[in-house]
Amino acid sequence: MTELARKRPEFRNINALKDLPTYRLPAAGFVSILHRISGFLMFLLMPLIIWMFDSSITSEISFAKLSAAFNIGIGFVPGWFMKLVALALIWAYLHHFIAGLRHLYMDVCHAVTKEFGKSSAIVTLTLSIGLTAVLGAKMFGLY
Amino acid sequence: MSSVNYGSKRIVTGAGYGFRDWLAQRVTGTLMALFTVILLAQVIFTSGPIGYEEWAGIFASQWMKVLTFCVILSLLYHVWVGMRDIWMDYVKPLAVRLVLHVFTLVWLIGCAGWAVQALWRL
Image (cartoon, each protein chain N blue to C red):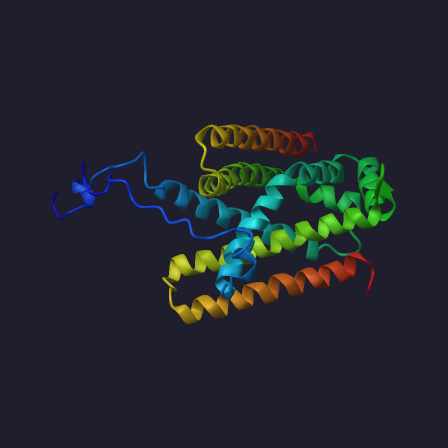
């Protein structure tokens, strides 16, 4: 038996319901968990994304149907709900994209200081939420 | 046990250390980021409002089809690595994890097939 193969002790002292809501994550921690959540969301909604891609390029008729799904609604789903889902996907993509670039930059430049971790995390959150708000306002016709 | 545990002296205790997947996730991520910028540039530099003709026209050229195809395959692998990480972190019972892994693979391969079909019908 080598040292590495020996069974390591497990510590499970975090209660998901009692501890997580009051746990004070640093900005980088929020970027990290949101990276995961946004990725999971896009994974679950992947058929919707491909359906939108398919409808948008197949024909003029399917393109018009897709536009109508957002403006009027499709089946029992109202248009505003489609827009809301699309906005969630926009946020997920933006966050995942920017946080991914942050990862790549850190890997390439060996940027591992605490200060950079914090400042880049704040930039990531600000940009992703800010751009989502701008695009959301455009989509709901606020400007 | 010897004090050296790297290179040819490394004691292997598992199937792998995940370096290949770590690297693949970065390479595929870079490709998808480049694709995003290229697609965005084409949308932004299109003059006038974008209707069906303009939008489908972006994907109609052969180089864009090939690039999009590569991005779909990249996405497949990228998401597989990411989802496997999630299941490995939160799902401990082996049987449940295996089922989720199989579901993830079927889901992803199905989606990739659909996306490629839509792309090449154009």
